[in-house]
Image (tube, rainbow, N blue to C red; front, side):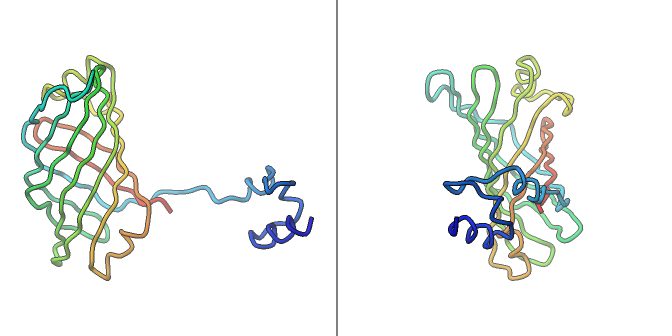
Length: 184
């Protein structure tokens, strides 16, 4: 019981919030903060047609989409996308796509930000077939979510390296639009 009281005290609860063996009951969980989202910026990347490397393992194709340029803008920062990035994709037989994008941003103030943006994209097979062929599709028909991480040496942007973010994307024939939110 002493251990349960110590654990409860450390987490700001009462001893009854912890059962034997350190498990929690519903009273502790109900006091946990629900995350919310704060808009950070919208990114508009110009892309070239995908390079298809073919089947790399049974049922999985590797594609690479070069990222050539673009802009990003939000309440706290804005700038441009530097050329040389790419989205390395693994496409499954039904069109489900695993995304792994790496690219660099430079703010209007000159700070460099390295971005790794992993995620998934899925839709009905006929919609995915059009999307993968480079055709326009209604973004509302596509689930396109990402989890970016940022690296920068700029002291004023360290908040980017110390938070969790999510992105919601839209794919167009020559452009990818992703809106990023900070999980707070």
